Length: 219
Image (tube, rainbow, N blue to C red; front, side, top):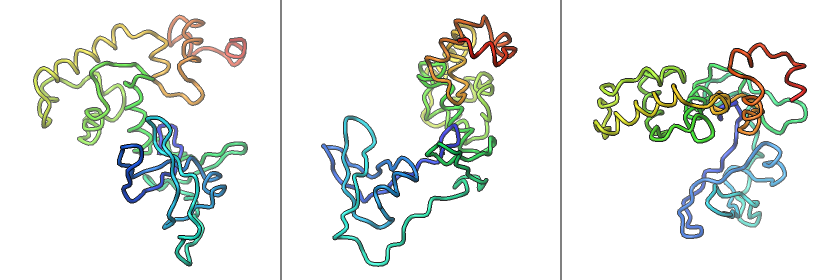
């Protein structure tokens, strides 16, 4: 479950060496791709790995298919929070529509400080997720209130690393460009380029919040 609620199916594989890397997962993209490939749970599959990315499933080895494997039925509910999933006309993705879904919140917070968001150097996803799991961080705003002493309570978090973590977030709070903040919000269809365009047009978030549909359409 991604930060926009998209349910992305992933094939869990028996470990296999591919290009010198031990692979245990491969992407299946969406419901249409599963149907196109005709892959079923329990199949032996052919996979490929192009570059340093998650491998793709090319298709099942039908001669090796055990008898009686049923076709895969894509879930109609979120596997994390149980809320209904919806697939809009013209889209391939099913989405969890619950904005309070724990998975959506987790991914959104991690995205907020990632290279595609605020790009906060020294604030890694592992520590952000640890803070979320501990219940200390429940929204991006909570990250800016975390103290060095709190961080040092986590195993393998030393004084220097904790200080760098807090300092990096404080610098981002004071100096991050508007473009990076817009990108960090993780709004659907607003990537880095669109965030840059909006930041060039509006002087601050207040001005952007007041923008009309007509203002945005002329960008």
